[in-house]
Image (spheres, rainbow, N blue to C red):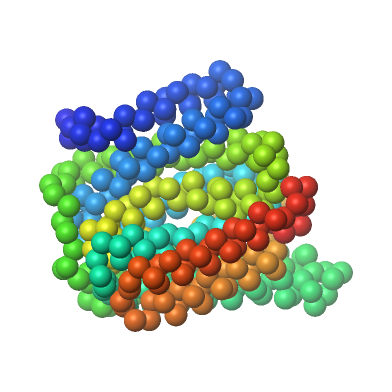
Length: 367
């Protein structure tokens, strides 16, 4: 515990951790105070993300950047999975699908691009293991193709389109989970030497003991999940007040806040010239959402949802995911990066955000 207290004393940002119990208390005492809950949830997620950043870096120092990045992506996506399960139980399928597509695009464009940009502003040219980036990008591209299939089947026979899309989505969910498992086997077991990190980054000083770091990761992940759930329930009402469409709320706002913890780690690693870890977090998280989180939600919807959920997304969302996947494949082919490449990726994401912002608030179709 003295490791945590020492970190809090030397990092004023962590003083905002006091917002965590406050937002939980306000949620219990005044659940209808949506504006206050929205602000408090954002203020609580920021220090939790910083704490998760330090703990993950301590784990990566012992396990290597590739495994550390995978661990961070897994714990970060656990938050999105918990939030999505709660939304499934409430029957909010539009929000679930928008957050899934938004998380994929946010991680593969904004998180990766901002990492390249922030790292490139400090280091002239950065290098990373392109084998890992290309594998994650290829998995993401395959998952995007799978997302196109249910919409294509539904359009072939309008009378039975919904039932056909649901049956196909269930089969694709099992297939995608198998593909994700094979990817883990390939990168962590049979060909792990291809994904070894380059030893060119800064170590970032003394880290926490591995046991304390892992315990902190688990506890903080649970807290992030709790606070993020409060954020989601309040941001929908806040979106209505501010005139934002469900598409923008789910695709942009929920995705950005849900990935705050992962972004803090990825950006910090990029600044320390540990781009292997940044790429592993950004693309690893995106591919994990597409290959594991989304299929798992389809299967879980049979148990926790009012009705089964399919993988039939709004065509515009699939288009954005496809563009993000192809761009990631193209960018990671060289294994080198500079700040301008990151700026281009961020600008593409801003174009998507501006497009969704123009969707009328009362429109539910594009989700």
